[in-house]
Length: 385
Image 1 (spheres, rainbow, N blue to C red):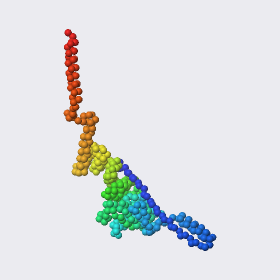
Image 2 (image 1 turned 90 degrees about the vertical axis):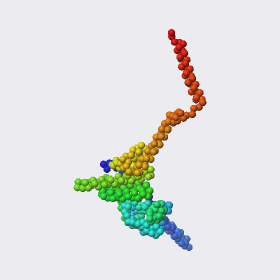
Image 3 (image 1 turned 135 degrees about the vertical axis):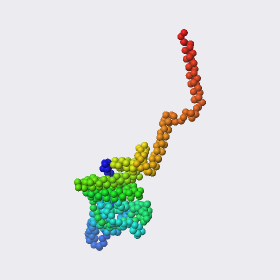
Image 4 (image 1 turned 180 degrees about the horizontal axis):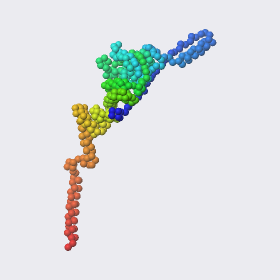
């Protein structure tokens, strides 16, 4: 049942590669008194210049490269690596890095990551595709691509610019999903889920969504082969894997709601409820999503179901009270609108009567009485004997 309706949603983003090259200027030739030899030497110098200009010069080690053109991300090569070995997006790279703030180490580690999966700060994620294998580089990362306006307490203050030393130790393509064991899928998927939780806690919901989607790719039992000997063990592992998948869908819905992607969030919670119809978090979030989409009655129904399953859910109680108040207000407005359309918006006793209307009314009464009297007289006059 857990495997029903779990549709994987993958979003790919392309990374941008930027190269920089400089051209040296050649020295001019010394003039000679002999005109013919001077012309010959000038011709040779022109040929040499042509050859030099046709050959691109490698990036210099002592120059800073402004990667984004904004001064927020600068790279300088300290030690060149192996030529033509730059990694591609989603390649698994092992890197060693040391980040400093005012000559004090505040961030360091040696990790294996997928390029472009937001598993390190954005500045390093952007720089790695521009490094060759075994290259060492220094990187100046502005706050926007480091730890932003929040910083990282207690050692990195808000809006801090950091200096990193980075070494690309190894790089290899990401293996196909079918080659990974259930244990490997679960480990990688949960690592990416935790990274998504990290970005969510920092209110970077776009990167959180990216990490959650990548986690869903790995938390999948597609292509798993089970033998008769370990069939029970495999089924248990698959069940655990899909349980984690449901948790990721719930987190994904929460992040999508933060950026007001309500249609996508509705799909995410529906993926949960197909497998677990009584999942309290999914029911609560579906109620909120439906309310945001203007489907107040359906949202109230979801929240009431949430409270039946979890009577002490304070958030659900508060949200339900808000929706009930909104429903009451909407109903009152609709009734007022209907009365206005039917011309019964004000009670008759409260309507002011003009003198002209009174004259017309009494005129109609007198006329009716006169008509009735005339009919009686005529009946008696013409009554047959």
